[in-house]
Length: 446
Ligand code: IMP
Image 1 (tube, rainbow, N blue to C red):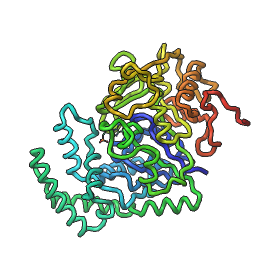
Image 2: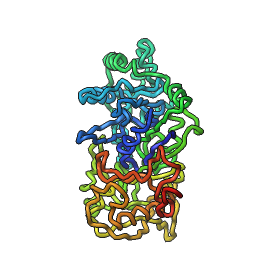
Image 3: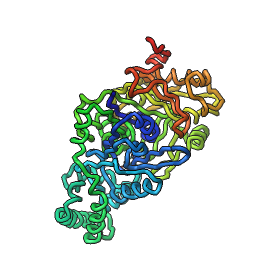
Image 4: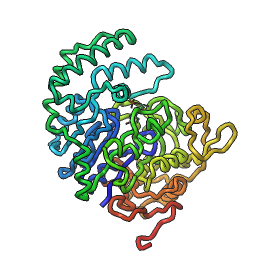
């Protein structure tokens, strides 16, 4: 048994939804620990596509308990739409639990998110416009409204009257926007409370109970390492902590209960929103990656920026997350390419640099130093074991494992559950995968 954290090793959209879905089969509990409806996890099961923003992908397994932890921010309107959609598809959400201390995204958060982005002009972050930053800002400012407040009708009325009056001043004076109707919003949120009430619990207590019973817990990260508020490419980041350490704070558990950290990375790199991206290719192969990889955001539909795999940020993600192994996704997107490049280091002001520069201005000046590998020019979509892969594809994976100094446990070759090579089960297998950190195959008996 193992308690495992799944994190994104790049700028989000790495395919964590599929990996979490695969691992959820072995998990008793799946916990979302940060972020809100800015996330979008797409899972394809038996040809049906599920788009989840808040509810952990584990909901697709009837026996798995799913918890939305304290570190998340919850937009009840979107959550209820998601629950309705699952219901239409015949998927039960009776196993969904929501932390009573998670903060709630209110209508003024969305308005302020969009208005402040407009006001920033060329300094905009390129947010999803879902009110995420303003919700976390209120949490830090201690003016936020939490799930437990939603359940107390009188308390909610009082808090919302006060906050809406305060936010209306900001909407009017700063952004020249019309005020919100406090009474109408209070009634709307009281309606949400009625529908969500029976899901709300003390999540940390539930999780601790599961820890004591030695149940398998999967902590599902959203966004990615480079979007982390503390460790990402600030200010072009989200407002929470997608890194593995965020799982402890966001779920309400101590670090000693985490057994493993699995990083998910695409076989190339994408980014949505503003901010530096050294390996970005705006046309040519960038367009091929975008088309073949269907690189459009699940939440906003925005086209993602595409580029070669960047092993500098990869190594940084290994370090910041204490990553044990990697899941490489979308390898099949590279199937048609003659030559594949990997960024192995940066050049900054004439100097070679192997380590990710946390100084944003320096990062913006980084030029990628590439190594080239041969492409395989053959479809890998039907491959189900490492032996099935063309030798060039295997070389590519070994090269990535070597550069990142971490073994590869899972390779994904398409959106469906079966388009996967499980090199080694990261939950049940030994704490090492078959491709070791030097990219060498390790025999099972070793
Ligand atoms: P916010 O989280 O909406 O405030 O957006 C801040 C930055 O994070 C923007 O660059 C977004 O595009 C990016 N972002 C937020 N959530 C995701 C995600 O799930 N995938 C990829 N990028 C995201």
